[in-house]
Length: 191
Image (cartoon, rainbow, N blue to C red; front, side):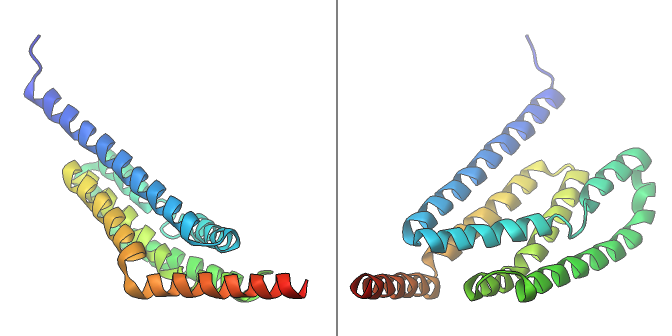
């Protein structure tokens, strides 16, 4: 049985996407395992809650413009270029509103100071999610699936390196662990 070159090319692209997705998911899993081991349970809980809040609100930035581009260009071909200006305006508006919502939640929400500052530090993540969505849609429109997988893998690898091999972040984690251990000792002695 002979497989045509177009089918072979499509299978290669799908396999590459599948492998890249699983590699990215594996890196995210390893990152969270290491964070869970390095942070205290309450510290990891604060981090996970702040990341979940940012991720949920991150979907509002752009609000599916990448998917709309794929649908519009699939239906209209290059005639869908007419939607780009309007969609970029919408992206700017929705991202601004999303960032303002997160700032308002951080400032006025019912949480402690560490959660508040973590939300402020995670504000750029929303813009990052937006850029990933838009670049992914662009690469899919150009049928550059290998570049799409490389872009996703690069983001995961750089995030992993940043979290675990940045000396300032490692010192901060060690400082937080020692400060929490000291406060636990004080509470046990006084308790």
